[in-house]
Length: 111
Image (cartoon, rainbow, N blue to C red; front, side, top):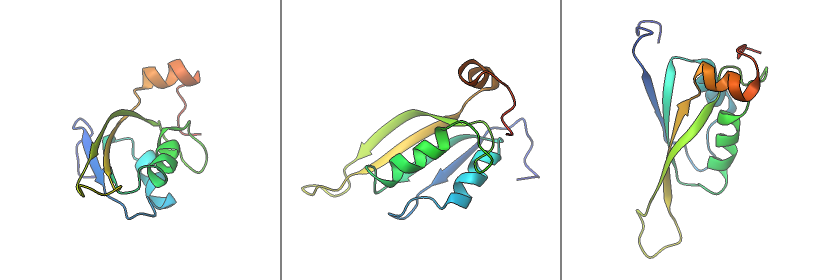
């Protein structure tokens, strides 16, 4: 990540197992503000995607520093017709400093 020029936006793609993202992965995604977009492919959209989205989009904490993401697009994908199972592809974009300040009242996202 250090070799990537900061002027280039970085897109991360995650496709976790049914257990969702490990907290260390969420912390890393949040802390690396060079990542401007996150594409999350979920096979468990009603449980772990919801949990992980809450941690990705919440205000910064000591455990999850950095400007939060915001959900921008979601698309269900029926890869298993005639079953109850459905995949979900969700796109999150990093909040800009202006958006963060508007909703959270400070530009200090490092907490």
